[in-house]
Length: 237
Ligand code: BJW
Image 1 (cartoon, rainbow, N blue to C red):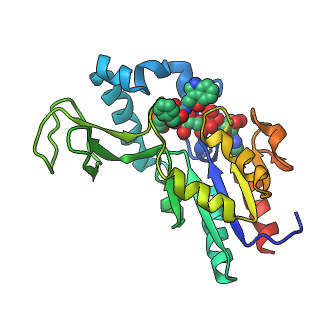
Image 2 (cartoon, helix red, strand yellow; image 1 turned 30 degrees about the vertical axis):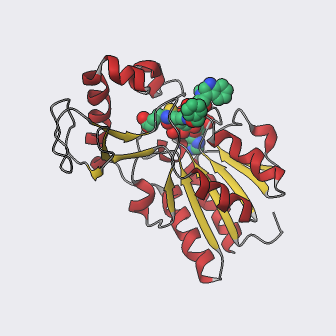
């Protein structure tokens, strides 16, 4: 792409963290091959069996400190700094609940599906940092009630976070780039179409064509640790 690319919005999915050892969802060995999403990623599943849901997220939270950002996360942080240095900007909208973008140095991040490192109280709405295991006995440090704490993640049927901020950034962008996501979960999967409808160029970087590959004007296929740094070098020159 040769046209001006000073303001970029990037949407990332679990594929960007795959080479760090974080599981994707719909790949052959992905999370949904081991768990039924209705049991662990819906409000109904949580109401039916909160112990199972806490255990599912506790396991994933415990693994976080042992995984490291990879070359793709690092390249995206360098891109943000490089664009800022020449007067542009980058908004990183991530569906991922891990903290690898932060640890790589990205600053302007919107976690639209929440964060594993946080918990929220269903009774008072407080959001707090969470490094330890959660359980049904956990108390809220704000309202002091027990039993309402849940992972700060967005389950199916719940409204993703930062939608207004994400859409505003997309409509102001020169380029929208989707990285490491299958394009099967909405509203994130609809961002590329929204970008195109607003005249914003859209491209995807993924291991293979995503479900909405037809929407993108440009694409690079391969492992994120290869295609993302290569593309960032092109943009930053
Ligand atoms: C690599 C790689 C490497 C591998 N390098 N690439 C019918 C039609 C349309 C929509 C709906 C519908 N029925 C229901 C809906 C809405 C629903 C939805 O989209 N469902 C679809 C499944 C059909 N969406 C919702 O419910 C959302 N909310 C919503 O719509 O609110 C509005 C509303 C509310 C109330 C009433 C009415 C409307 C909420 C969605 C929440 C998603 N939550 C999850 C789990 C929670 C967080 C967690 O536990 O981590 O978020 S599901 C899971 O999927 C997770 C992910 O963020 C999300 C996306 O997955 P992702 O990241 O794309 O992973 P994969 O595995 O799918 O893909 C990985 C990709 O990487 C692949 O392409 C690989 O090739 C690639 N890859 N290795 C580069 N090395």
